Image 1: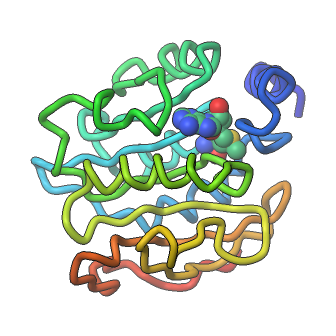
Image 2: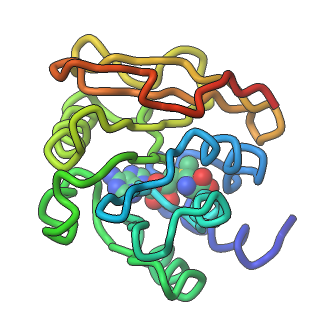
Length: 205
Ligand SMILES: C[S@@+](CC[C@H](N)C(=O)[O-])C[C@H]1O[C@@H](n2cnc3c(N)ncnc32)[C@H](O)[C@@H]1O
């Protein structure tokens, strides 16, 4: 279990425990389960990953069939961003915080983002930080776009009512350390249709 990836991840945990939020990268089971909820983007659409860590979800998203050119990943810790650039030379890796999404993303992507997948440990954040990230997401996302978020805690990792979000529990993945639940969020101020997630089914692995 102590391969290079785990060592780099563990160092980031020591440096920024609350931001890293886990002892290990996501398992392949969790990564592929989340990815299975991501609809393939149309040719002018993008998928964004927030808090990419060492790229477990990135690999699963690429395996799911998201083209490298339509996947943009964001990581705030410089050492992890450097690791990701080496591991995924064809994917756009942005070093920075999700709170600054609007200014960090290439202009052509704004309003053309169908899905955002997040590994950011939202439950460790103060409400105003959660609010900043959700506002940034709403500013860049397509109408009816979806945020997919995993969490290790029981219940929704975001206070949906206060953040004007509609939430949906998608399922849980036991084969992860620790077991994780997957949630989907949509802007409640837009007319929403959860059926837009065509491949919806409850995950339980
Ligand atoms: C639980 S780890 C998940 C890593 C990876 N996605 C995985 O599933 O293995 C959380 C990651 O989110 C990053 N992170 C935390 N807050 C962030 C923020 N505001 N913007 C960008 N990345 C953030 C951390 O540095 C860490 O790499």
